Length: 219
Image 1 (cartoon, rainbow, N blue to C red):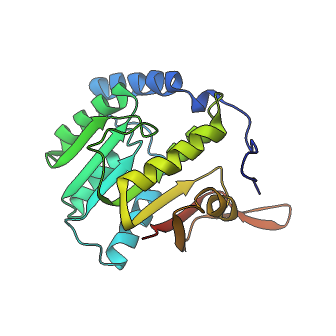
Image 2 (image 1 turned 90 degrees about the vertical axis):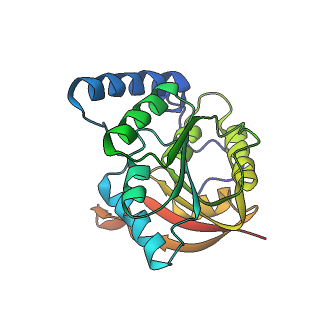
Image 3 (image 1 turned 180 degrees about the horizontal axis):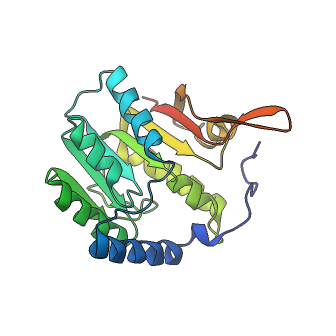
């Protein structure tokens, strides 16, 4: 388990803005060439898992939803197809937002709002959300070669600012265990539920390759 202040992961280019700018520039070109939206983080089942939770708990369709690090925006498109009306996606990569805008246009989902935003320094208008969703963004921040510990703390602070009290935070991670995420978000959040994810067996021990949790912001 990672202790606050420790560096649990080796720094990686996956934690740099330059990597994601280049990656989404490639995916944007591919979409323009052949209409392929690119990689879906954690696969389609991760999107289904999120939507099923929202439906199971009868989260109102007009709830304001923020997709943190939206990438190609496909999750927002699937939420819109499921009837959700108040959807916003942000990404610090302009190429990612360009790609998600093109995906939005292709799918005819004009109600999805998209913005270039650095979640670690959010603008004042980014606030009051009922639900925040993260699929891999906190993972990427954790791999930043430049002060990952400090940036994880900034992330938690930003989350407290943009999410309403008693709002829901759904996070999917392949780097962090449940216990580690509970530690990272211990200030300001309480765990509501662990969502089922695929299990793997290695050396006779069964574990999860992906962790998916639902937190609620404290009052």
